[in-house]
Image 1 (cartoon, one colour):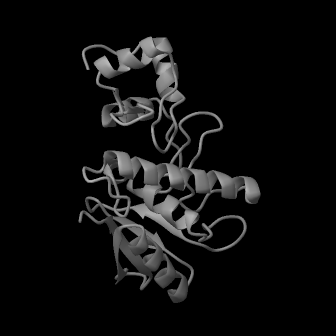
Image 2 (image 1 turned 30 degrees about the vertical axis):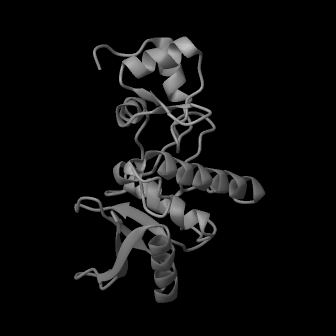
Length: 212
């Protein structure tokens, strides 16, 4: 990128779809973002524009990062009213039909992103965005499948970052829930195995995106 985006271009970036990175703006704004390497025009109709990995990084560089808990990725929304996957442990967690619709829409958007960005158009394995947003991606797969996140409403899953590359830790309230989370992630294109924390004896999943 030769120069930073203008204020108008930043607004286009900041209001991109938080999951797919789909952009809305004037033709001139979108063309300028393409020249800057922050967006690309999809070759298939309707030829929408999407953020590149550099565009996602530019947007996230301005996002607030919260959460005192170590290893947690709170997945802040990209903009006011934007979608944020629930990783577990949130102090407030709205539920109901509206949230269910948001989650469904975000998951369908992620499948479309897989179709557009995986070289073979496959939707059964994670795409590049998921590999750079591991905690968010795993949490979205779990929430979209109906697993409840840990929160004010009671126990549920928690997804946390790990020191290992391309791997997240998933915790659940009991063995049955942990196995159910593993089955969901494997169905969503992840590899998941059960492990035990040596000090506490807590069972957890170590999950990573499948490549083939």
